[in-house]
Length: 313
View 1 (tube, rainbow, N blue to C red):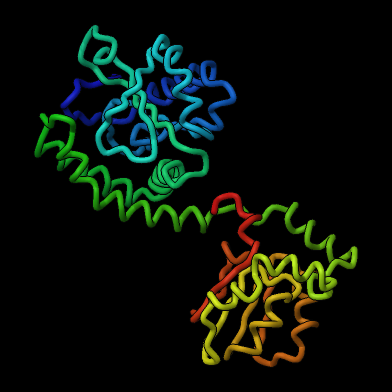
View 2 (cartoon, rainbow, N blue to C red):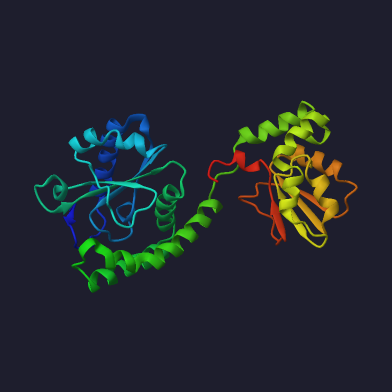
């Protein structure tokens, strides 16, 4: 079964046909959007096989600019994807929908196409929510039970407003849990970044030993103004993410109680240890701070330039 009448709620057991429909619809969208679509994925409850769902296929489309999609509104409409500019409750995305309710031949809604910006929080939320519930059967069944209870309370629900509002708290909490889960299951740092910093050391490039002109250039990002923003206190415990060879650590460690630095490159950490030998309160660790964070708390955590290397900030 695919599609339900607008303003109603109906929950069905999962059907493999939904997965097939999602793949076929993704192929149709790619044929129209071309390079405008950076990625398209099947999301929503029909992408979670273990739970009941409304028989409406949800797809998330990641793009660089909304304008590029809107420029293709005519061919999208001709293919059955209807732009819904006044959709309630949608922020930072645009919506297209399919079904006889939109082409004037009936009253069914069959697909919702959520167009969001690439790497945006909206994109992450769609993917993370699906992945988390697929990996956590208990949370998925809790979600299903909530959906069933809401359906039984209001099977006729104009705009599905009561149904959506009733899920709000669960969805909000689950998105937080799903974000943490996405970090915990994130693949290790790519070899390219690690090789980059190892190669710098092998070639004798050490920012601590940069000539004054280059140090002045780097101060544009993390000079005196940067230090002022830290509001550093002599009693602070401090963590630097991406300590490198210790360029900033040499300035911060003497001004705090305890200093810890972490970096993915063993070679840069060894060089930082050499530079910080005179700072008895300083510790440097090798590791990926996303997947293996230090197991203690800090008064201050800072980083400079490191996040340039992280795609999913």
